[in-house]
Amino acid sequence: QYIVLVSVRTLVRECPSAFSPFLNDFFVKGMDPSFTRMIKLDILVSLCHDPKAIEAVLTELRTYVRHSDKSFSCAAIRAVGKVAELARVVYDRRAYMTGEVDAASARADSNVIALNCLSGLVTLSEFSRNDEVVGECAATMQRILSQLLSD
Image (cartoon, rainbow, N blue to C red; front, top):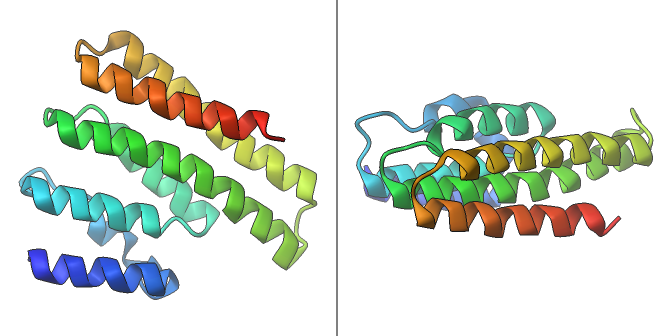
């Protein structure tokens, strides 16, 4: 399974649209070993190339950040930050390519996603008893805030 997932991760990075229909297949299962969870997390972030995928992955990440494996939880927190960053690119590109929405509206949509991520991370850091998780939340919130302030 490990070799297959590593190969899929490489292919997803090269051509994410080919794997978009299979997004749910990469959701972490309760019995997945830690190495499988980490690779699937990487694949999920790589598949965030459209608004629906971003929404689905962020919904899934809400569960992962509370996982009992703290290293996986911290990786999921970092993934939240990456998805928040990708949301800006995805929404800006959608506005540019399709013309469905203007650039300001697309930027506002991506900012709402970033603010929702910030809110979730603040809540997680308030209630977590693990210093590593709180530290990862703080670092990720700092990256998201920097992105928001760069407008």
